Length: 433
Image 1 (tube, rainbow, N blue to C red):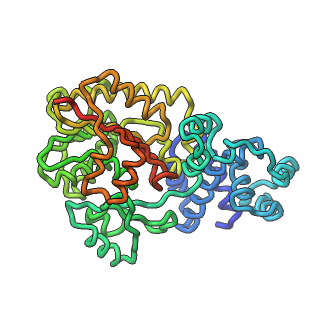
Image 2: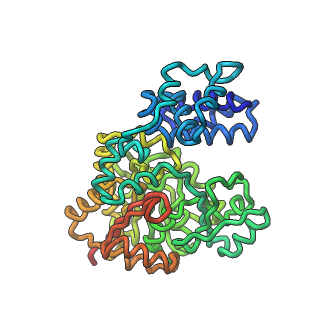
Image 3: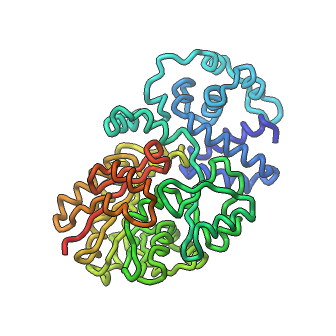
């Protein structure tokens, strides 16, 4: 494919993402299946254009007065890639498979200097989200907002201790000329750069179960749960099982692990992941109101609730999703989280632990839900982050930094800006004996 043809394909994919409201990476995969002529380099280049366009959406839509695929690609070329207007015009020429030639209005907008740009445009997120982040983070809100969506995220791996140790995983990866860095917070974490070009799932270390793809922030909140040998552990919103695998490794094969979710399709994929990792778990599909767990009420040592949320902590990986979120959807999610947390709490035995987690940056889904639960459930006491951070799964740096971020409390907000991880929130509770 020529560079101009790739731009036409990117415009097509972006418009399909908007129409289908599906994840951009899934739309890209579907496009590749129907365009077999596109080679691996073409697919990689196409993905880079698409995601760059979504990251630049705030500036592009504001400057060009449009939000379709053509406007987003033009904006990314002009203001993210800093291409001169004449070079853009040469690509948008209408010849062959190139996009249609630039209109006079487009030329004028591309040539116009950007002045008096609103703060929300500089952040890269919608204006109403920028306002919420300003209220939440205060003086650092601009840095927090930019870091949440504009940079590309690294590829983080977790070493599966059911298969071996970190050094063994590093040796296995080195055989395939993959040399990751050690992560700062998780002792089991390895990090590859955002531009890592190979398919991690094709590596022998992955196929043999030595590593799993898991963001370091996800590893941190799983470690704070403190799952230990011999315990009964419930992953209440298990989804595809990423944190289930981390909890299972912490149990070291000695204990009872139950993975539950209302989504049967996501649960169906978990068996293969468990087998590859050498872990075991009971898999249960919940009913719409949490049915199917009555036999576990008051029996669990640990209930881990990774509740459905906006996913705002993962916008570096899914920048398109920032523009689908609405204030109303945040309210609905927060109400759902409160319901789920209340149901899950019934499973915790006296003296047991409850961990509430989201991959969100928004206080309405995080602190507000945790505070509401605490007010309605006085038998659930706050468990300090500083206490949980003493786990051997976390580094000395992690203990110091997480304790400082928690400020002596039982809640913790991780962000791309603060910790270099995806955005995760955790609230720790312990049921009164």
